[in-house]
Image (cartoon, rainbow, N blue to C red; front, side, top):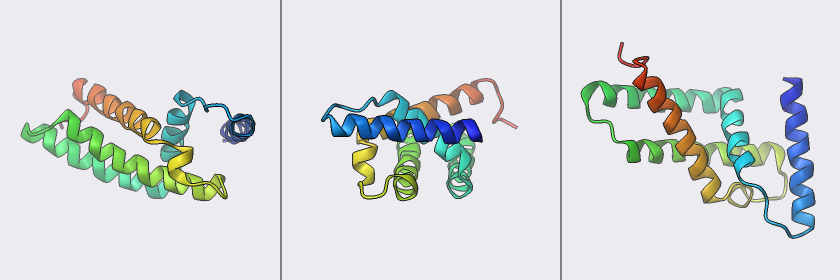
Length: 125
């Protein structure tokens, strides 16, 4: 936990330096930051579990659609981004801190993780 807290503080400092100089923020790390936030937040984690349960059922029935899975995870990213900004980025709007491209990247990462696990047969039981 201490390493994650230090990492978050470093990200905040870097983002403020980037914002102060009018530079474009790095987005790859932001998607990872959002994914880590979801993994460590109980409320969002429960939302993620309901999405996973739904997608597992669709896999079993044979109605799973990869594009729709991204959409489901994007809803999760929107909720996570909003909660993250409320908790850490006071005075900034969540869609500015995590633009659509970052949220979409994070949603695709979660979709890919889900499909990888499903490919290993972990969700077919």
